[in-house]
Length: 414
Image (cartoon, rainbow, N blue to C red; front, side, top):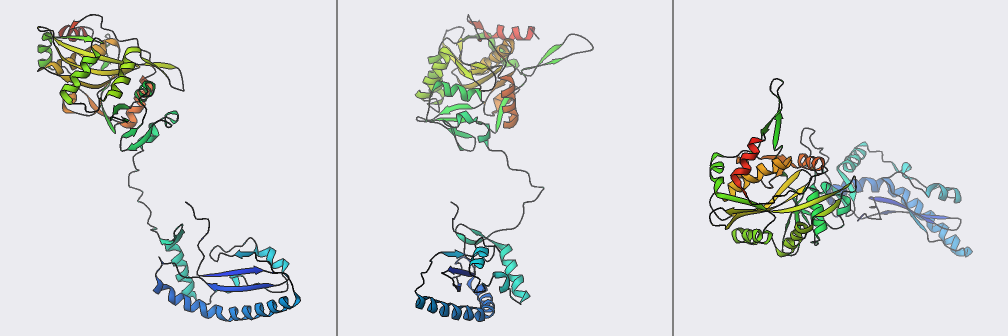
């Protein structure tokens, strides 16, 4: 909080306005406790010698005038005006002087010291310190080097103004909100935040670096021939070979996928309130008004991987789509190779559906093996805003499909 009362310098002239006469006093204020008392003693001695004679004259004149005024029965005005010596200006000085022409009022300009050494020390002291709310404290005058890199922008700037009423920046890459409203969760997804949770709060995260596969394919033309799609998604030979043992479905067993994630990872961040919000988005999608252009849908999907021989659910994940961006939230794998096959088949299916970026969240080695690369937050948010406005239909998989056939279909279409 800003101090309403500026610090009084070492010597302050106080003007007491009275009827027809003025009483002037020069008082010496106590040195600030934060200043070095020893260094002030020398300056006080010099200033006291310079001002002593003026003080005596003013005091005698004031006593004489006050005695005459008391005898005449004149009333006394108790208004007091402070003059800041360091500021060199006083708004009430001119009016006081004109009203009281009988007495010559000394101004700070007349109280200059003849010692150049003292003036130099006083200026040096003023340069070294500045007045703060707590008084006079030393401050550093060293300027930052022009070669030093600018500080990274705060993640808070990526949070739209209309959401700051409900969501606040917590620390680092994390934000916090007490609302589990599916509409708010969907809005955070639309802005690029990864919505994770604690038992009582939503803790959206906007990573400093996001692990993404972008673009999912590239177009390349060879010597005037037709364009050929060059995939950036890497499918290993082992995943392709093992893919014949697994089947894939979509949006068939949301609750079983949640249970599979809990069995493998524990509750982690997938607490009941956030699961409830995810389920609401999964069942009906959420319409988002971006406050800039049009309205867009946020859809949440469950992906299931089944053992072709036993029919048991052995892997899967939860993810959501915004425009042409698909984000993987969390997943599990109960059987060897089920996880790698699921990712390979899902990546190929996303490309066939027309998705342009696959957001994999935090950077991990197995994601790098898929072809994912780290994308800086600034670039990531830029891509989100570019791709989220592209309308996409509902991603459907009407029947159970072999993972191998999904991968091969993608390779044929290239």
